[in-house]
Image 1 (cartoon, rainbow, N blue to C red):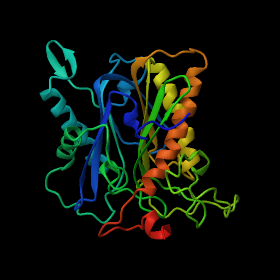
Image 2: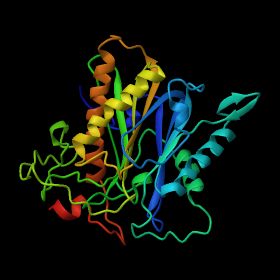
Image 3: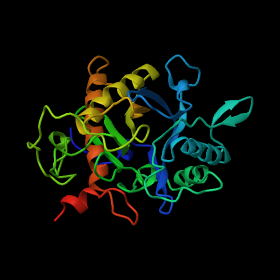
Image 4: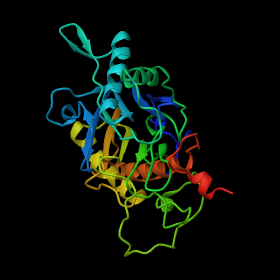
Length: 330
């Protein structure tokens, strides 16, 4: 395996990502959209998730494909971001056809960034407009770090952010990950700059700091964030043909990447969840073993994307946490 050309989830052909951020708000939204509808799944491991239209992703539900996925800040207010995406898609003539009416299917998930130092004194929910703006800016090249859904994210001790990574497998299939990291847990080892995800790093993509050895395996977590303030939300994608059940299993496997990169992860007070996407461009060469290979690649991509999110974060006025660069880059 090796990273794709961009080392972004958009290396999965036909997928584009758009970000919209508000510096005063210290928040934003991220939309992933396909050139055409795609199969999607979902698996939730955290104890405090926030989602929209998530039930319809179950394998037994009627709708087989969705038009876009949205990650957003703003806690429950951010669940309005998919509405802005849906409005723009409907204007473009996209959506599930119901008696001649187009109904865009846009599941979404949110993270909590309401007490991160930004101005939250709005009179009208800003997230619908942020969702629309994110969709209209969608491209196969997009920024990482303090942008989109990761604009106001934080971790246990560092500023969070938006990350992405990709891999091309030997069988020709491509896998990518997109993540907004707002975790209770830490992404770095002990007091050093090394990332927990270091064993899976390619080409110094998050600093090439190597493995962190200065940690106590018996140390108990010391949370620095409060109840309901934490969530890492992600999307993994492939160009393979998958059923909804197979896509769901891909999301399950990808959670391994979250646990590799964030310690602790999947806590009762995180809303950790992963969407999965299958664009259906390529047959699985091996129906037995290739789903396993895709799951491994998705977990690897997600671990790397999490580290890249923190590595790429930029300092801004009013931040309540330092960036990785402020603390460790010389």
